[in-house]
Length: 544
Image 1 (cartoon, rainbow, N blue to C red):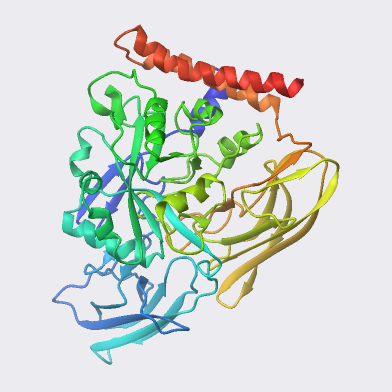
Image 2 (image 1 turned 30 degrees about the vertical axis):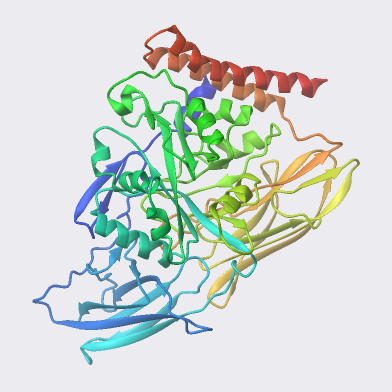
């Protein structure tokens, strides 16, 4: 195995993380869970029991401008020692936060408390202090002030990757009705996933199966959040070891079978079905296909080169590698690669992907914008980005060297430190954040001289702060593309590197895979060989 493959496999390493779901009273563990424990960084919570000296608090969350009632997330902290108060009546989130409906009551210790609240990514943090020793039954109103309104600007956001496990149907329905609304999500794709024997606890599987034949998704969508069915189509060598990879099939008409491939994950059968077969079937059904988990899996390169993928997820269930392991390399060989993201197991972060969609939200229209690359991904900052009046996902044509005017801005509740302008994967300009009331902003207004094909995007640095849920803040727009004399950027050395990685993947598959016959072997090998041929053809064309 050469060094390219070794580096790729290290970058794609699947980290097993066990996450404690204290509200349901059980622990769950999955290789698809985030690299940081859901309880990482939590201080011991003060449990309120019947024997305690307690008080009852009612919280009202309202919009600061309209006084309309709002769902949100709150955190209650004991003033004397900074200890976070556990609220077992509510749905527990990360880092001491709890999802709440617009009016909610719960028991707290009879002491001085600080109560914090936010909603999604667009409100400043509201905080109030109370003394629960003076009044044992209090009502507190927290007004959430919106510092940015993406809906008014015509953007809708979604979570493209969500599973739920080890909850009863009643707990799951409550979770789906309260949590996405508290996080200000517009659209959620609840997805089916098979793994023997763990799938017995995957409650989201039964919801998807039922929803493909009845009005379950319509019923779940009777509030402010649209729910649609998805499937995680995947192959692993071993229960969680790297294999062909994982793809999300969004807004499926039916389950693509086999949902999961290979004896490593299903304890039976062979490795004789490439993901591409299921991908093509799903596309014929009208589904949108997103590669999961950054560069994890072997079949991503041949599928991107062959044009069978619509978007690329990153940070969906942990930080597996960086933008350089997938997005930047594909973009630098002339591919158009829309950025996307989700959360995988539960909604443990504010991660979501935004697309411009004025008017009524429909899954079909939202996915069309996603596939067109008119997206930005974030778990904190919100972006605006224009190049010579063109928007994210657009292509500019230039035939001679010229200066382009770049205008970009970002705004976020938590300090994201800086806003960076990226050209072909390199930072060419940056602006530091500045505080503005209870949030932070950064803006760029740059003239960029271009004399070659490129792509431009903006992002926040990966070394940024953590958000309220204790997750490293990230944000990145999909590119605006610049074609020079009708040619896209193409780096032959990257194409050759990708060819080498596909060849190494073939060697690993030969060593690890089990095939029933030569026909199965060839059906898998053909996907990778086709990718190699396409890349070599691109190299030849580039040199002509």
